[in-house]
Image (tube, rainbow, N blue to C red):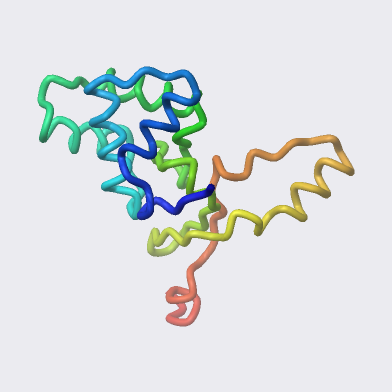
Amino acid sequence: MVHGPSDLAIDDVITMVRRAGGRITAARRAVITALIDGSREHLTAEDLADRVQARHPDVHLSTVYRTLEALEALGVATHVHLGHGPSTYHLASDPHHHAVCKTCGAVVHLPADLLDGVADRMRAEVGFEMAAPHFSLPGRCASCVSGDR
Protein backbone atom coordinates (compact mmCIF):
# COMPACT_ATOMS: atom_id res chain seq x y z
CA MET A 1 0.00 0.00 0.00
CA VAL A 2 1.36 3.43 -0.95
CA HIS A 3 0.76 6.28 1.48
CA GLY A 4 1.05 10.01 1.14
CA PRO A 5 3.21 11.67 3.79
CA SER A 6 0.24 12.98 5.75
CA ASP A 7 -1.19 9.45 5.96
CA LEU A 8 1.92 7.93 7.49
CA ALA A 9 2.29 7.45 11.18
CA ILE A 10 5.64 7.02 12.87
CA ASP A 11 4.78 3.38 13.53
CA ASP A 12 4.17 2.80 9.79
CA VAL A 13 7.63 4.09 8.91
CA ILE A 14 9.24 2.15 11.75
CA THR A 15 7.56 -0.99 10.41
CA MET A 16 8.98 -0.21 6.94
CA VAL A 17 12.47 0.20 8.43
CA ARG A 18 12.23 -3.06 10.38
CA ARG A 19 10.90 -4.96 7.34
CA ALA A 20 13.92 -3.71 5.40
CA GLY A 21 16.21 -5.03 8.14
CA GLY A 22 16.95 -1.72 9.87
CA ARG A 23 17.24 -1.08 13.59
CA ILE A 24 15.21 1.54 15.41
CA THR A 25 17.12 3.75 17.82
CA ALA A 26 15.95 6.86 19.63
CA ALA A 27 17.84 9.00 17.11
CA ARG A 28 16.26 7.21 14.14
CA ARG A 29 12.82 7.59 15.69
CA ALA A 30 13.48 11.31 16.19
CA VAL A 31 14.62 11.77 12.57
CA ILE A 32 11.62 9.81 11.28
CA THR A 33 9.33 12.00 13.39
CA ALA A 34 10.97 15.16 11.99
CA LEU A 35 10.61 13.83 8.41
CA ILE A 36 6.91 13.10 8.94
CA ASP A 37 6.26 16.40 10.73
CA GLY A 38 8.03 18.27 7.92
CA SER A 39 6.57 16.23 5.07
CA ARG A 40 5.00 19.29 3.40
CA GLU A 41 8.30 21.19 3.46
CA HIS A 42 11.66 20.73 1.77
CA LEU A 43 13.96 20.17 4.74
CA THR A 44 17.73 19.91 4.58
CA ALA A 45 19.68 17.66 6.93
CA GLU A 46 20.50 20.78 8.96
CA ASP A 47 16.78 21.70 9.16
CA LEU A 48 15.99 18.19 10.33
CA ALA A 49 18.83 18.29 12.86
CA ASP A 50 17.47 21.57 14.29
CA ARG A 51 14.05 19.97 14.71
CA VAL A 52 15.49 16.82 16.22
CA GLN A 53 17.81 18.73 18.57
CA ALA A 54 14.92 20.87 19.84
CA ARG A 55 13.56 17.70 21.48
CA HIS A 56 16.74 15.62 21.70
CA PRO A 57 19.74 17.95 22.19
CA ASP A 58 22.12 15.00 22.48
CA VAL A 59 21.54 13.94 18.83
CA HIS A 60 24.37 15.38 16.75
CA LEU A 61 24.23 16.54 13.14
CA SER A 62 26.49 13.65 12.12
CA THR A 63 23.95 11.21 13.60
CA VAL A 64 21.18 12.85 11.56
CA TYR A 65 23.27 12.50 8.37
CA ARG A 66 24.04 8.83 9.15
CA THR A 67 20.38 8.17 9.91
CA LEU A 68 19.24 9.81 6.66
CA GLU A 69 21.82 7.76 4.76
CA ALA A 70 20.55 4.58 6.42
CA LEU A 71 16.91 5.49 5.74
CA GLU A 72 17.79 6.08 2.08
CA ALA A 73 19.63 2.76 1.84
CA LEU A 74 16.55 1.07 3.30
CA GLY A 75 14.30 2.78 0.75
CA VAL A 76 12.39 4.73 3.40
CA ALA A 77 13.67 8.24 2.61
CA THR A 78 15.06 9.96 -0.45
CA HIS A 79 16.80 13.22 -1.23
CA VAL A 80 16.43 15.74 -4.00
CA HIS A 81 18.60 18.58 -5.25
CA LEU A 82 16.53 21.74 -5.52
CA GLY A 83 18.97 23.89 -7.43
CA HIS A 84 22.41 24.76 -6.10
CA GLY A 85 21.63 24.49 -2.37
CA PRO A 86 21.90 21.49 -0.09
CA SER A 87 19.84 18.37 -0.67
CA THR A 88 16.40 18.17 0.87
CA TYR A 89 14.81 14.99 2.22
CA HIS A 90 11.39 13.41 2.23
CA LEU A 91 9.81 10.02 2.71
CA ALA A 92 10.12 7.68 -0.25
CA SER A 93 6.46 6.70 0.11
CA ASP A 94 5.53 10.03 -1.52
CA PRO A 95 7.29 9.84 -4.90
CA HIS A 96 7.16 13.02 -6.96
CA HIS A 97 9.29 15.35 -9.05
CA HIS A 98 10.07 19.00 -8.40
CA ALA A 99 10.09 22.13 -10.51
CA VAL A 100 11.89 25.16 -9.05
CA CYS A 101 11.20 28.71 -10.16
CA LYS A 102 14.44 30.47 -11.03
CA THR A 103 12.81 33.85 -10.34
CA CYS A 104 11.09 33.49 -6.95
CA GLY A 105 12.36 30.09 -5.72
CA ALA A 106 8.91 28.48 -5.50
CA VAL A 107 8.98 24.67 -5.49
CA VAL A 108 6.19 22.90 -7.35
CA HIS A 109 5.45 19.21 -6.77
CA LEU A 110 4.93 17.28 -9.99
CA PRO A 111 3.31 13.85 -10.47
CA ALA A 112 5.66 10.89 -10.17
CA ASP A 113 4.76 9.61 -13.64
CA LEU A 114 5.27 12.95 -15.42
CA LEU A 115 8.68 12.04 -16.87
CA ASP A 116 7.98 8.36 -17.57
CA GLY A 117 7.91 8.90 -21.35
CA VAL A 118 11.25 10.73 -21.25
CA ALA A 119 12.78 8.01 -19.07
CA ASP A 120 11.45 5.27 -21.40
CA ARG A 121 12.82 7.04 -24.45
CA MET A 122 16.25 7.58 -22.86
CA ARG A 123 16.41 3.91 -21.88
CA ALA A 124 15.35 2.72 -25.35
CA GLU A 125 17.43 5.12 -27.43
CA VAL A 126 20.67 5.46 -25.47
CA GLY A 127 20.47 2.84 -22.71
CA PHE A 128 20.48 5.48 -19.99
CA GLU A 129 18.58 4.98 -16.71
CA MET A 130 17.37 8.37 -15.49
CA ALA A 131 17.26 9.15 -11.75
CA ALA A 132 14.75 11.99 -12.12
CA PRO A 133 13.51 12.13 -8.51
CA HIS A 134 16.97 13.27 -7.39
CA PHE A 135 16.99 16.53 -9.32
CA SER A 136 14.62 19.42 -9.96
CA LEU A 137 13.53 21.02 -13.18
CA PRO A 138 14.38 24.73 -13.38
CA GLY A 139 12.03 27.23 -14.95
CA ARG A 140 9.50 29.90 -14.06
CA CYS A 141 6.33 29.36 -12.04
CA ALA A 142 2.90 30.49 -13.23
CA SER A 143 2.94 33.55 -10.94
CA CYS A 144 6.26 34.77 -12.28
CA VAL A 145 5.28 34.09 -15.91
CA SER A 146 1.96 35.91 -15.57
CA GLY A 147 3.52 38.73 -13.54
CA ASP A 148 6.45 38.79 -15.97
CA ARG A 149 9.02 39.04 -13.18
